[in-house]
Image (cartoon, rainbow over all chains, first blue to last red; front, side, top):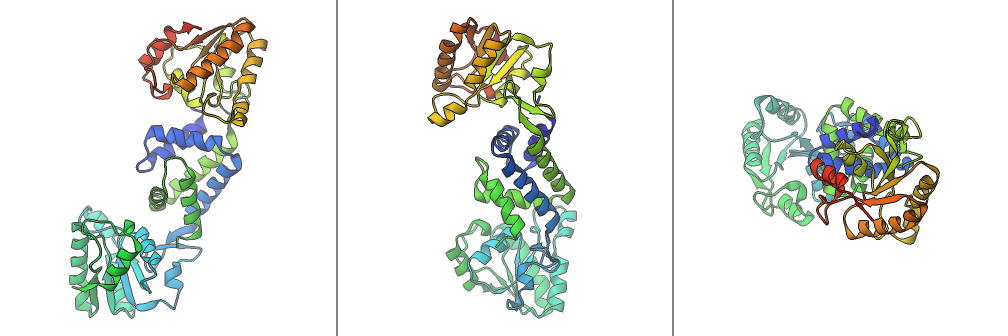
Length: 198
Length: 198
């Protein structure tokens, strides 16, 4: 019923999480009604995004133009600390607090909810390799304060402490069952300050 | 905080109706995690959409590759009937019923909710010109069965009847206060069959 290119775009939007087919139709109609230039910009930016944004080779945060992210390229960051998160969006939230000057390591998920194949894709081996090779003294595990995140933290603590580093969990201030990405800056700051050795 | 191209894409998604900034971040992260080929396809299809989908020059429905939509190009359609809708999505919904073989005219909105400048952009003058020039005998006003849609229908009836055409409103079967786009096929079919002269 829809023109071919219209239908294709509806399918792309329907494929996105949390967007249903009817909402996808409305979104595409909205794009159709706005200026053609704006939609062409969107297409160009989406293309650039697909070809230029990549994972940092060291910490697996978002990188661009280079194989390393802006944080890893910044030699002024404290090279003795690694903050471990589940997701790049968690890194962004922590960076916004301006309370942390160390490095990051993005796992890409947590241990409990995943199948064995997915667990293999978590960047845990890469974290161990970094701790062995780099000047790491502290690892701050900033997985979400949920059962799954706690399990992951416990596993990392057991694995990393024998390597001679101190392992911390984000401290008090985080409400249990909450989500790091959505926490406000003050809560995140106090959690960073009140970190607890495991 | 985000890489430049990542942030640009978040902005594009936040500009869409019903998508907030946090949901936009999640959507872009989802795109980032899926295969690069799939996102490049999305970009290409969005580009083709922006350059190839246009308004039909005759009825203002969605057209592609040509200046006229598939319905206007189909000479087997009943050229004596014009069904007037607010939106291209309403045309799609009516087409899905297979109950109507005539032509369409998409107004691009209704009278009541708009500013005077927006009302000027409604394709009412174009509809009058079509009724004068084409072999139209019946105009079926399929604006939504709301106060605004009824106002528009009444205005069209007063304007078009002096031109010697019969003007109909979608008949019983449509629940008052509902939305044509979301109506089921049977309701729409019975509304088409039970159309009422104004």
